Image (tube, rainbow, N blue to C red; front, side):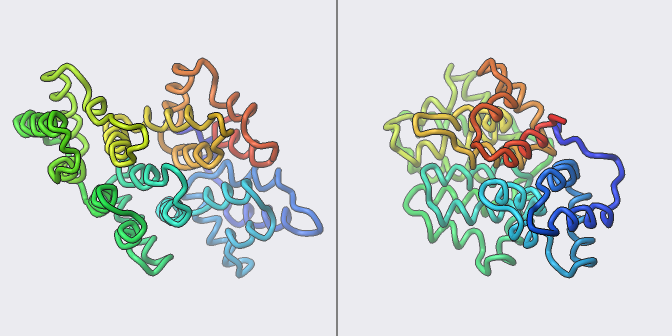
Length: 316
């Protein structure tokens, strides 16, 4: 369930005019920007962006980049983008910055979006950056992680409800043999995780647990620094229970180095119109603190950035 609070009807022309007024003069009215953009759904934002272009002959995102800065600017622009454009931007940033755990963002995009959504992301990526997503994933990665990530972003999974229990049992056995032999580079594990439907894979994961009394993810544990095994676990978690995966991203955002603002904002921005309420509930059950309180107490001192995220969380 979504957390976004948006009116049933809105006027894109009036919204565009309000934003233009907020950007006039020596200062920017950040509150006005938040009051509009943080309370418009995807369809409303798309109409608003077009209205702004028609009225003022300027892309709204470019206008926002001129008016605000820092984390507030980045999150506001990401939110204003269409979802496919936004995910393409997240993927590009992850590959170019190559920050720790960058591969998890690629897996997140490849495994928590529908097949049609992933196809739209790849089209948008190619339009924006003049390369295919697969090409850039391959050129920025290596070895087993390259094979896994390229397979994940290249797939078009079946989205229907038909599953085959005999295949699930057979492939649960194949995965168990791979784990027993520690043959983690085996092509079969990548084939299974990247081509089977998510519903089929969930049956396979359950079959594995029923037969062997353990979860598959526990089998893919070796050195904590082994990025490929971590990538396999991330893939399984994203497919099996994406809401729990996102709650874990939020939980792990605070560490000894500080707070991963980018991870927090990415989850909030990409899930606010999808399932953020369930993610919030899972977060609270595990941490005994609301996500709103976590954002209030831990996100950077930029008040506008913090207020924007809180608005997407449903706080009015």
